[in-house]
Image (cartoon, rainbow over all chains, first blue to last red; front, side, top):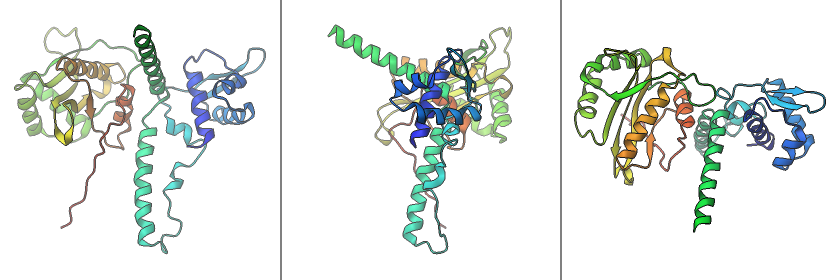
Length: 146
Length: 165
C-alpha cells in the first residue's frame, strides 16, 4: 500500500471518529508524523471524492462528509493507486510458463487482498481501534495489579 | 448466506428476539433462504433441522430471529446455524457458523447482529473461545458484516483443486 493511501486512511479514521469535529491538516500531520504538504494533497483528493469537507476560516480544517459504514479501505486506496498493477502480464503472447505461473500466484494474492480491503469499512476500523484500546487498557490494568 | 452489514454507526435498532428453531419454522427458513439465494433446497433444510435442532443441542445451534411482539409465531426475520467442531484440520474445538441469513426487507436493523451475538453467547456457554466461518471472496456483504462483528482472517487458508476428467 502506498504512503498516500495509508495517510488517507489515517486521516479518514481521524475525521470519521467524530464527524462534527473539524481537524486541521497540521494536527493530523503531527499525529501521524507526516508533512502537512503531502497530507494537503491527500486531503484534496479525498475532498474531490466527497469523503471530506473543507472548512475555511478560524478554527477551520476538514470534517468527514462520507458514509463510514459504506466506505471501504479499498474505496480509499483506489483513489490513490491501482491495486491490480501487481497482477498484470505485459506481453501475454511472449510470456513463458514461469511468467504465467508467477502471474497466477500474484493474482491469487491480489484477489485476497482486494477481498479483504473491500470488506473493511471505516466504521469497522473504528470498532477495531476501540477493541485495541480496550485490550491495551486491560493489559495495563493487569500489569499494574501484578 | 445473506446479510448486509450492520452494527454501529446509526443502525436503527429493531427489537428482535432469538430462539431455537422449531419444526414449524422450517418452511419459513427454507423460503427465506430460497428468496435470498434463488435456489430451493427443502431436503437440505430438513436435514439441517434434524441434525442441528434435534440432536446434541449443547453444541449445535439453529437459531431464528423473530419480532418480539408476535403473539403467535411471527414471521422469521433471520436465522443462524452453527456448531462446535473440534480437531478438524488440527484445530482446537471452535464454533463454526455455516448458515446465516436475514430477511432482505429487514436488513440494517440490527437483526443480523442480534443473531450473531446470540450464537456467540451459546458458543461461549459451551466453553468455546473462538468462532469461525467461511465467506466467498465475492460476497462483500457477508465479508463486511462479519468484519464489522470483529471477525478477521484466521490461521487457516481454504485450498481447492479442479479435478481433471
